[in-house]
Length: 101
Image (cartoon, rainbow, N blue to C red):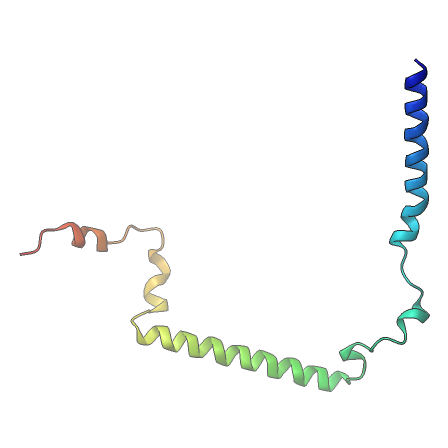
């Protein structure tokens, strides 16, 4: 019985110590400490500059996507032909299983 009380007291003390130190471990630094660090990239740019940068980024992504699509279309891929056939079985395995003449 005494061992149980000692063990419970030790557990309570260790939990108490852990809880006292936990807020210090997760606390955020004050804003003044973060000020010397570099400012975010968007802070020095105007709204128009950010819009132009975003527009250029989207334009480059669109050009890359179109180039990739053109490349696979040259290899026989047709987007409009493939749309409704995803749930239908393919005819290719039947042709492959027929004996060659």
